[in-house]
Length: 467
Image 1: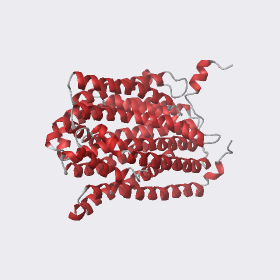
Image 2: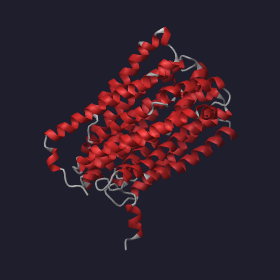
Image 3: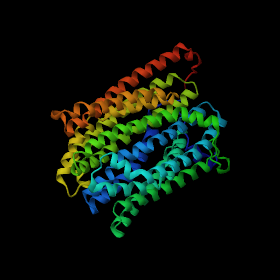
Image 4: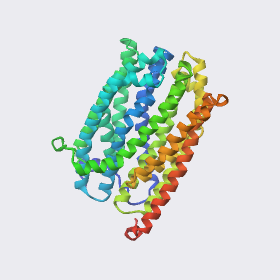
């Protein structure tokens, strides 16, 4: 009979390289989905509390920071993708030494990344918001929110890197548990700081920073208690050259891609800002609601990336095509069901955030028409990006995204949107589904070219029999 302690620890792993995949991918994705939803609830709780107790200006102030925070954070969180992919490939290849070195390089990299982000965010938030054309009646609150938010960035980086390592070996349940605990703390602190101490946006930012600290402590403790090659020994943490280069090879293009997404979103956010604070509040609330659909679809990006990573490391290349089809089918179903459901309930959902502004609610509905209904297209290109990254190829998705997402959106805003007949919210948001479709088609071509190259190089000869 197995030791209960060993049985319990084995439940924090998943065999991604053998047996049927549909059930395993769904079981893997569901905790990732719920974890992402809890992360979004951090921001949602911020906006709901300030919307109910402080008004639509405070909602706009918090919402105006989203694209800018994403732009600043994505470059460094991309490196966590590189850490996770490399751990998955090492585990699939049974290279425990390489996995151990990757873990002990990733965590100090996360710490340094967080310190750098904190310094940049605290010093330059207000100037960045000015460059974005943030309305004068909210810029002070937005800058205050960002400065306090970035005080928790080191903790956020440590959680993201640690969670990426856990997911690489199939442990998706404990990041969910940790975010649940931190999320409850975040909501309680929001209410305390805003309703009792009257701290407005400063209170919700402080609550987020504290809850991120708890999540980071929990995920690092989980890594320290593992009994496999991913166990974290604090005394062995050191940035080693080879693991760092491997992390950068996958993670830097992913981070650049995320930052370029951020640039295009900042440009669109600036265009939204130009319509005034009421439109900004409606768009911010709608964007927060839509994020729940995206994060649910994004779970299959992580599933595809780590399943492909382990099978690529194990040289089980034939399974990669089936992983791709399963993840594309799942993300399409989730995108259609959730996107259309949220659109159907758009007004009551937006009223949670915008209790004092019916006009802002209507602007939010306009945004959701062009984003929620075709949202599955976003999931499709996101899954394809994960599949290709799982094979250790991250530069291709980055270059494709530069053109498909960033160039398309910037060109649209700079040309069509500037024409008087098309200078409205509908044509601004129309650029989202167009850019998603273009990017998905280009990524599909990229995937097919990679698979053909693998066949030409004789990789099929090393494919082992599957269970």
